[in-house]
Length: 59
Image (cartoon, rainbow, N blue to C red):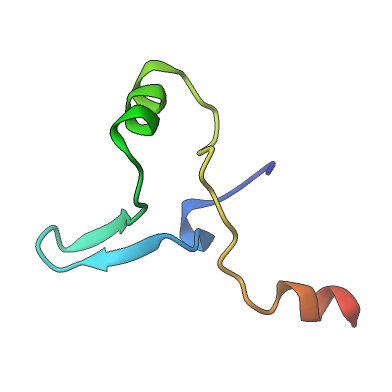
């Protein structure tokens, strides 16, 4: 997960109310509490949203 960018996260969606991109991840209260307690260098819920990553790897 080195160098994971929020721009490529599968959970990044545009929120018209905030007029900005936000992480749209469904997590429960326990997960949210753990996320707020710890200091992370990168998001533990990051998932690469690049659908063509596998195809480029096969070429």
